[in-house]
Amino acid sequence: MKSILFLLVAIVATLPLKAGDPFNPILVNVNDQVQAAVFVEKYEGIRENIVLPDTPVPDLSCYDDGVCIHWGNWKKAEAIVSHPKFPDCPILIGYKHRNCVDDQSVVQHHITSVSFREGDSECSELEKWLYGEGGSVSKDPDPDKLNQLYHDLYALLAKEMFIEFNEGLVQSKLDPLYCDDYTHYKVSYVKGSCTGWCVGFYKFMIWDWEISFTLSVPQNCDEKACCKVTNEFCIDRKTGKLVHQEGVTYGPEPEICDAKPISDNECYEMHNSWLLSGLLEQVRVQSCKPACDIEFLDLGGDVIVE
Image (tube, rainbow, N blue to C red; front, side, top):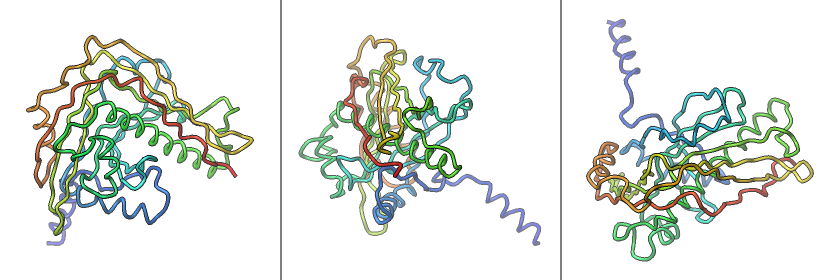
């Protein structure tokens, strides 16, 4: 009997969780333990009701730049981000990342989704910035601002990766990555230079609370058109402060950049496939807009080495 019970427990243990991996997000630009606990609590109930997208990394020509010969495998992860302009609003992102096997300071990442809680008082400024007055469900998000937010989240995530990498060097009794050293920490991503969005609006009952939640997934209008954005980080040896630079490498130009990337029905089916429980209120497909010429978010200035 014990052997049968052990076998059943072993089988159950190997079954995948319905809600995907355990919710253990990386916290980005979160300043203290109190804020961290609040941010995680806001999404724990939501993550029991929805699986964040695990969409494939686009096969864009801009990836083939010869920077790395041997890349490691893409790893799926989640992060909760505090944007400097909206510091009290936790933004949940799904992403993938991989390191260069030949040089661990060379990294690529790919954001698969951007999410936040609608109607949350802490997110009201973000909602106004994205949608204007009147609420989100009644209006389309501003595509230029959505692309800017997407761009900023990439940079914030890259900064967190650098901080963790540099801490690993220090713990291993190695020198930090100073700017006058040959090696800097480079985190790049490739995106369609003509990007649209498939946005889903959800409602959940969590305990006695009705929670509204939006999940935005980037879509390319022209699979051949792309650009590569590289965030580079190092530490000024004299001041100990972080230095952040960004470069954009342009690939093929898009033929058109004002079409919808997918149909409304395709967008609905996509979002519905991630829903475990709750209600998918509606979806909106945002037409593509140019997404490579975006305002630089300078994240330098923090004292890293005392």
